[in-house]
Image (cartoon, rainbow, N blue to C red):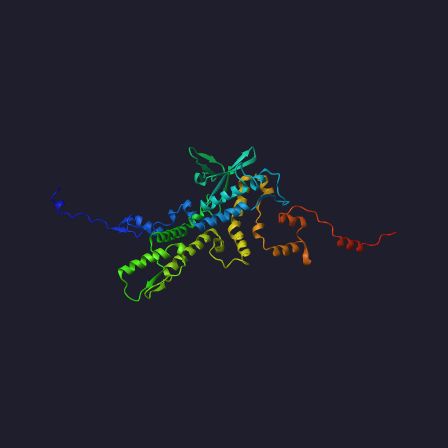
Length: 411
């Protein structure tokens, strides 16, 4: 060691900054890049939410299942663009409406695809052909697929199953997504609502820890004088034996020596926790486009307003997905000639129907009641209501009226 180094001071150690999240999160000074990142994302925030953990939240589960069940439940038909009739003879009609593959129904297929589109942002299905005829739609795990743009601006899908890699052309992949940041892949609704889901998760964990480890005191027994240790022990044993547990709830208490019970009121902190949980349900529902009453938050909007809420849900939550599905099917599952002739259409009439009274008035006007110009036929209304075809029996009163108005025949 040199002589001058003996008198040289050692450089000052950078003071560590501890985060409030816990002692395990440390930073080497305020200029540490990790500290800036911690401040930006708020520590253990929404970025740490996985899809599996997010689905444990009841609000997220309800939003995803409500939309995916609706997409799976509604009929999806292949329609002739010119005649507006169902193209039942086309092989794609059966795949979309009834049986996309050998192991799934149309409901199971569309529900799974929509669920993946909401959670991961993308839903993929392999289009299996025999010649030019589509014979099967096989759902693919979105975590194993990467859409990639080539140098010539065309797109390819790199599918990486276990133990291999396969490059698929867009004509061989049915890709369902709605919102997108780059035009190649969709946006995950779980990631959009990650912070709201994380706060809801942390609130639930805090309340779970409170019920598990905390002390919940409902009230106090007030004694007018000082109570001795023996009397205190006897009172404690008596209270635990007679009034502890759910089976002893709401029993009347027998008090001695002038004691009076005083019940504790809910604190502002308790009310704030309840309000926070309700607010997080609303925040999560807002990201998915699901109205509050559909998530069990409000009870006042049910009754006469439920039809309006259903229409809002269809128009603003389901309609964008209808368009995404219909245009993706036309893009990947049809030839150029078929794109001009055929359309894939969801029938959302079952969700938009009002009460039986409203339907009766609508169909009566559609048939020309009240002087209105008729725009529907009797068989069309029966088909709209999913009723079997039936011929109209002749009305004898109408026949007599027509015969009375006929001019007399010449002898």
